[in-house]
Image (cartoon, rainbow, N blue to C red; front, side):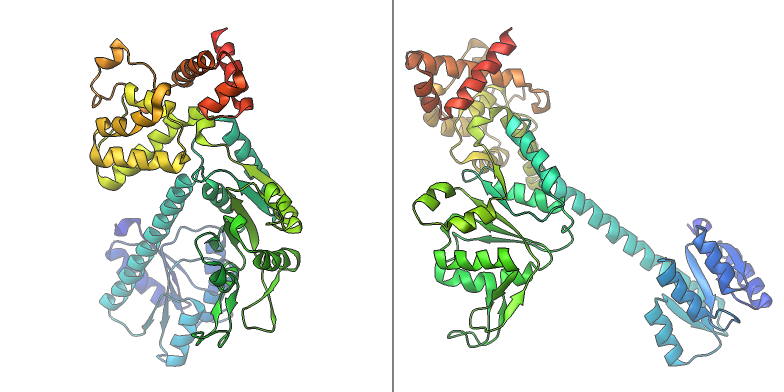
Length: 468
């Protein structure tokens, strides 16, 4: 709306100020006029609400070009500026545009010519603001996607560690089984760090053949090998200023481990076929599903590199040891894939939820995500139950009369209302059954349940506290 558009006219000629004030006011704009660059700068500095500035070039004391420079460089203002001048010199136009002018109108001009220039810069400003808002929304969505889902003690501990280390440059070793979310942890460190505006580069060391991994990481010079017709930067070069995640670093050869150690120690490396060292500023994160301490003992992983990487260690528990997170993951993945595939699977039945909690999830969160994705696409809980049931064996909770009366398609309980108590009830039933089958041998019961002995003791204590 024009009535909401404020235009600041800056011209040392009073007649021109009066003319522009009259013309633009009749067009519906709110117009304020000043007769010097200094007055204009004072207004902008004090927060004058202005949509567009119409600025004359030829003025005494501070001319239009200098006023424009101060607006952009000193005041850091992005207000669109249309330059006015009786001089139609190309050099002046170019200089004004380089200083940040949005458009240029030569005196004398028609009313429509100036109005068109104002309309154009306002439209451009609107589009720029829309793009900025969209980027902010996308960034918020990206951070939401990369946030932690869960309430388990293990995840809460990891969140606290990330808060403490994100803004530092310490190297982090992230350990856990495949599918637990090691990359999610790495990205959470990245988005909360001072390097979040620089590149985040992930390299899967297990997916790239060993003979190619060196050139992939460090790049190569022209002629380094047959087919190298031009030099190529490696992943470390691309990640300069940001972070690099060396995923499955336990699969890396000893020779490459030595080069990674050099980067950690000196911040330098040499490209394949190169002679000169390249300096790089990269924060290194590493992840693995291997026991690196055992690999050090077996002489398959360098001890000095292990201690360089293991400055901060984050160990992510498998999903079977934090079952209280399963309902929250389900809710999160339902929302994501309903939106992606335009489906309306709003909730999971109590019967299916009990099976999801009882299942051991050898593929961890990644497997659960794929299961919920399949549920959303097929919209058939029976299909999911038929896949889970054979794997559950004796750990499947007994079917009750209440469960049998429920239709698997009926959304009995919204996921957001599922409480920890429901999880505890399922775990209690499973633990009691396992203990009875092992004659109350807690170590064997833990093995049968697929959790650590320590985790079993913790869960038994938690169940006892709830009962009291």
